Image 1 (cartoon, rainbow, N blue to C red):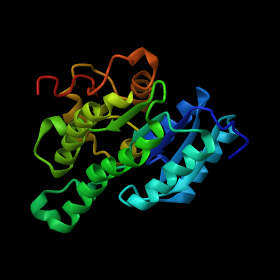
Image 2 (cartoon, helix red, strand yellow):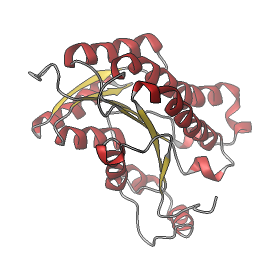
Image 3 (cartoon, one colour):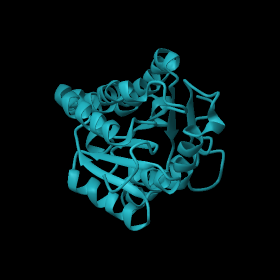
Image 4 (cartoon, rainbow, N blue to C red):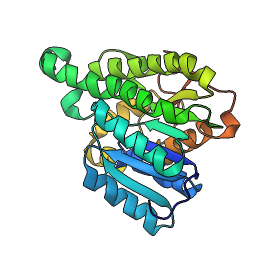
Amino acid sequence: MNGIAKHARTAVITGGGRGFGKAFGTALAGQGLHVVLVDIAGDVAEAAAAEIRVGGGSAQGVGGDVTDEARMIAVTAEAARAHGGIDILINNAGLHSDEYGQPITKMGVAKTRRLFDVNVIGTVCCTLSALPHMKGRPGASIVNISSSAAHMGGSAYGDSKLAVAGLTLTFARELGPDGIRVNAISPGLILTDTIRAELPPATKARVKAMQLIDGDGEERDIVEAMLWLTSDKARFVTGEVLRVTGGMGAGV
């Protein structure tokens, strides 16, 4: 794969074709890791990987639905075979559009099931798929992406991300003996290009009024949190959910 030495450190990032996932991949590649960007749209993942390669990093984009156990087993096995193992897994893929931010009474069972299948079962599926290839790797680390909505209550999306926070502690306990740390990041209002374009000004103002820091959260704030959690600087940190919210809901 792209001439990378077999035993280079490797990161697998789901939802890697855009947004946080792409930013995570770019940052880790900049630290010398080979990154495997997994996205349900394989062409989008490969386009993101191509950008990283143009910038001098090592990356591959592959298609994969995080709810497809057989596919994720194959993706992680291939990454491990080609590069000697997996050092970092970032469970970033998730449903969070306005379509899935509706009341459960409006979404109904099928859509609510799909939300939990991707956000919750997808995290389980990818973690179990990567596990055999992460055991015993020095500094092995898993980072799940939760949400400030998990701490606020009142939405199915928030409930799905609360489950991700719960899984983080459960997997930290179960995988600790294998030398794998498991943590999560809970982003608040992060003004990515998509959010800037879609978020109504009134909603932005309402959320910012809940922050303790009078400023805008940026994509780099989440990237820096990920880099710290996956580094040796956080070697004694596991089972934690790091809120990066500007203090929003700090008392919740």
